[in-house]
Length: 438
Image (cartoon, rainbow, N blue to C red; front, side, top):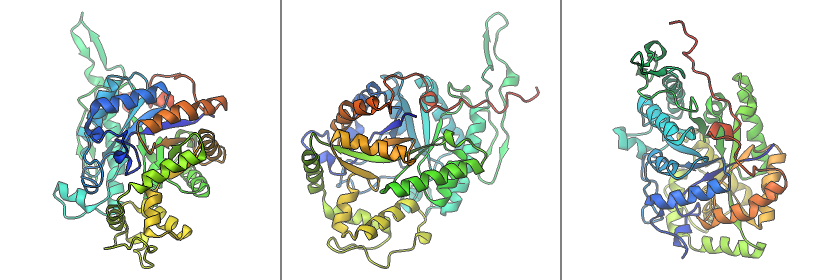
């Protein structure tokens, strides 16, 4: 079984200090041509997809690193114009959107791209996001996931509200579409009341690929029930294997084929011609971190007022049960710090490259070995590749790591399909209204 590889496209790279390198473009985050260039490199390398994270809030201090993002479905539409095969996955929140508008945006992206759209479904943690939408505080964790489940249900109904054969475009009779093949959905639920139909015909993939990135208990259930690809973060192989087995088991309990839930842990590769060269780049990036900025950001995530840089995390951190947002990332960071007895300064260095995702520093062969080990151990169906520095980290991964994976039979040499679902080996869902009597 070959690997699925997604490129997590993040301005100048995933290391928070990447923008300070001489090679970096400080305005990359708002440069469409830059993103198009990165996506073309990934497509030439035959990645399954590119992915854009997003949040309805300005994340972090603008003084710390490039801040602000172009809305991802708009940016991916621009990328669709200069690519032909690579999948296009955008993050969008179920807490601060409405199903009709969001279903329309993703169906439109699927049409524009010829069947390459994917939706990374997030519930959005944090009071700062809530306060941008007229709320004082974020809804409770379980409430956000209940809304998300219904949001996805409504979106699927809307995507299916046109039968595949609704449009006949019969010029002789003057009938463009068969009215009985376009359906109201008449959804009424705890969070939404939506009549439908969608004002976009059924898209090439039927449904955009559904992706999920939460690893809390609620997140795992949501992924097992709804997601077709899962982006996750793990620091150890043992934790990754346990997560993989758990989500696949839950998928079976929901009556799904576990092979149709692809698990992709994040990996931040820092590659050198030698180990020494790779570690020198890693050290340079760590040197460029502004620790005071990073400590304030970490304190906010851990829900404490202040952290001492040269001390370990406080013993009296809040219990995970009291955390209403980013539960799994909170646990991962605390466990990493406790397990390795890291000071705050050391922890910041470990998190600087991937915000909790696994960073691996070494040669191309060593990176390929790491990917193969995790894959064969049953920890991953593929990986969410997060270069510490862009574009150079992607170019080096494509030029040096991918040939090794291909030699080992672990990655494609050419695309065999044209849609994102085909890249991931996933079926096109049948329309749920097509069999209804008219």
